Image (tube, one colour):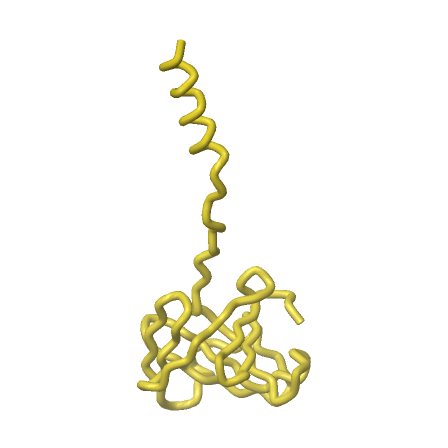
Length: 120
């Protein structure tokens, strides 16, 4: 009987322990908008992060949905990303995600919105 009580106490102790919160694993891969103001609607630049390269697009009318790889400006930058650190052409930034991964904030104050998100 004592062994059974000890076993139940032990199991209850481990079940009742708080677990570490699960941090979502967001990715920088994809198309992201940059705005010269704090308003996403003013975005005039889009960055595409894909396969270790960052490409840049410009749009005067803010219509980024119709752009494809033929609309990229010439050239690209290399990047690496490990979950909270982004290195673009050798310059490192700490990044945090908000809005279920639809917005990324850089340690230097830059903010990007994922093209496919509804984040403001």
